[in-house]
Length: 292
Image 1 (cartoon, one colour):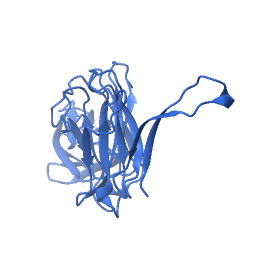
Image 2 (image 1 turned 120 degrees about the vertical axis):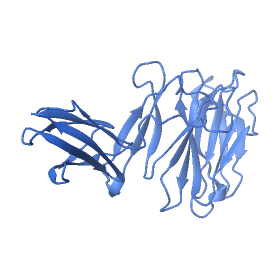
Image 3 (image 1 turned 180 degrees about the horizontal axis):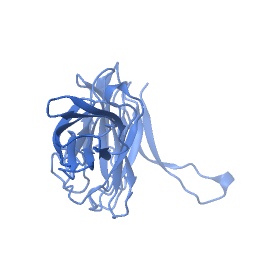
Image 4 (image 1 turned 135 degrees about the vertical axis):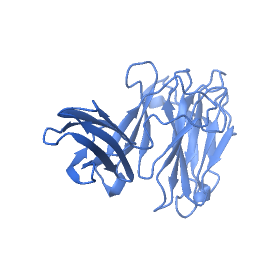
C-alpha cells in the first residue's frame, strides 16, 4: 500500500460544532509501495529567503527487503507550496539500507536551520553514518561535515546548550567498544567556524587516544591525562619500569573524553618509567620520570 502525506491548514474561526472542513494545501504520495513516505516530516525554516517555510520528508522504506524504496525529499514552501522536490537523496546501496533526515538547529549561527542525514546499515553492518548539512541559499548536495562510529548511536539538535547564541547537538551511544551496553552521551558545541561547502570539519573529539603526564619529571605524585575518542570509557592503565617489568596496573572508568588520573609514585624508586593506556582498540604509551 502506498503512503499518502497531507499537509492541512486548520481554521479556528466559527463555532466548534459548525467547524468547516480544513483545507488541504499540499498532497503527495510515496513513490513505491514500500516507501513509507511521511515517516518523518521536519521544518527547515526559510532556506531560500522567499518568505516561506521549507521542509524535508523522509520515506524510510522497508530496511531489509526493499532498501531501494528509502529516500528523502526536500520541498520549498510557497502559495501554493510546490509538490516537486528540489532535492532527492536515496539510500539502498550494498551496505546502507535506509535514510532519515531531521532538523539539527542552527549549528553555525548564520540564521538558517541546518539538518542531519542519517544512514542506517543492514543488520550486522557498520554503525550509523550521520551527515550534517548547513542550511541557507548557498547550500548544495554535499554534506559539510560528518560523523561515523562503528556502533549504535544517535544525533539530536538540542538548541543552545551552553548559552553562546549558537545551537549545539548531542551524540549518544547505547553500546561501545567490546560490546559494552553501559552507554554514553556527549554534547558538541555549535560554532560559527562551520562553513557551507567545507566537506569535512576536523572532529571536535579525537579519533585516536592521546596521553600526557604532568608534571614530568615528578617527585611523588603526578597527573595522567587521557584525551579519548567518542564513547571510550573503560581504560586499562599499566606502568612499566625501564626493564619492562609491570609495576602497577589500574582499571579506570572515564566519565568524559578528557579524563585525569592522579598517580601516586611514592612507592617507586627514582628512574624512568613507561605509562601505557589501553582502551578498546586504542593503545598509547608515554614516558615519565620519577626524581627523588
